[in-house]
Length: 178
Image (cartoon, rainbow, N blue to C red; front, side):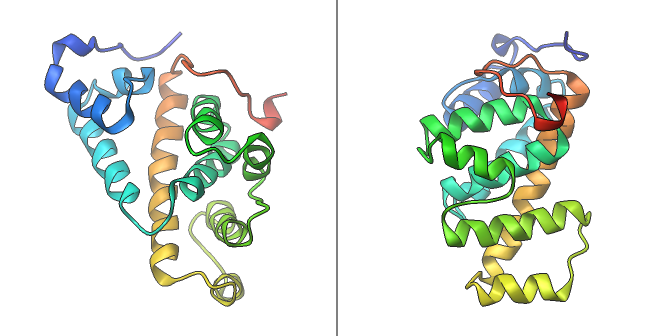
């Protein structure tokens, strides 16, 4: 049972129209996040801005999966597993790899290694890690967007864990919960 009130989308049609435009649906997370319209608008703004960045949707979904797995957020694992397989079409094997911060795609693998190092190091990354990802061809813009995507995903992970958001996607459970 959620710990926050679920806001009825009819109470703020303009805000929820923004959600539907950005996401195609109005997921439970946004109905809870709407307790603070500022927080919901901030989420939408960062999400939209990053969708216009240099990292393709398939990489952003992989990053979201790796972060959700690390943080143990079943809501986000469920949402991004669904998005990964049904929207960006990376396939179930690649979704599973991404949860372990791995990929069969060399560029995505380098970005996931960086993301994993950042998350596990709580922002501290060794020079050797940065050198390795740059040697793999990762650009400064991509490094910057990896950090921004981590920030967005940590926000949604923590929010959904605090709110105990009811999962409205096919349920996926993080590995250490099994």
